Length: 152
Ligand SMILES: [Zn+2]
Image (cartoon, rainbow, N blue to C red; front, top):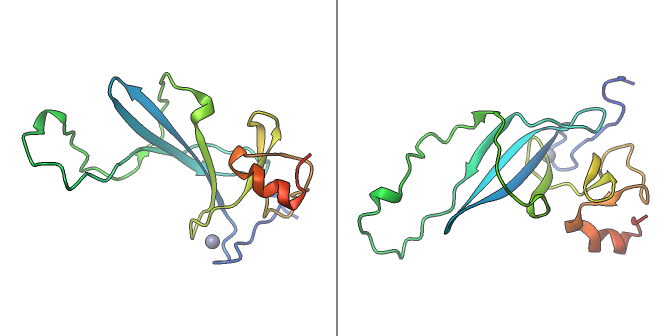
């Protein structure tokens, strides 16, 4: 057993072994809100770190009459993820969204937290060391876990 990776995840769809943690948050800037995401690998100790961040692009509304929107358009032609940098914002942590996905095929994996209120470390349900009843579910999975009797 690799001491740096005491658990094992094997994606049942693609067979990959790596997991990605993503956080999405919204910044309210006057009438405009921006969504940003940052993501990075889940590590062997169930901590994770973010390696990239980028703005989540909303699909432009085709019905909008084409006028002079030049003042409102930013140059978003660079869609490559940027190197992670500290980004400070005033936001409400409770509105943050967290996702765990297969690093290869992007399949969403349910996960829980080692402490209440999204505290501590992340424990994906498909990791080999996942123990039902031990973790606090990500709120999005509360109903699903209730049905599976995975709640503490
Ligand atoms: Zn996969």
